[in-house]
Picture 1 (cartoon, one colour):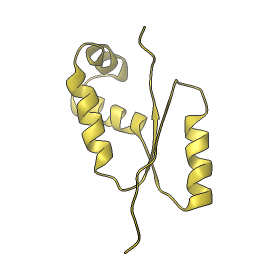
Picture 2: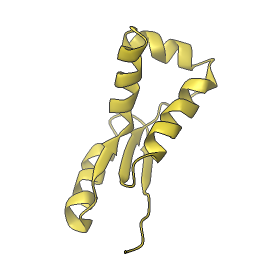
Picture 3: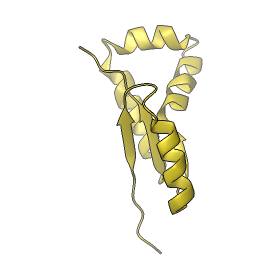
Length: 86
């Protein structure tokens, strides 16, 4: 079996992360899992809007850990948009 690896792209919103991940996936034969999709899935699971779970996530780092755990279950390339806190 060939070597498996994980590539994570993390940039601010609207910086081209999804476009870049799709281009790399096409070129290298990777699959893409978008962290934003997992975030939306978590919001739905909690019966919250994305805005509501984002507000909770500002103070509850368990949400970030849960996203990481879900992403790490995929042996694929991951696209993740992050919001800079400051």
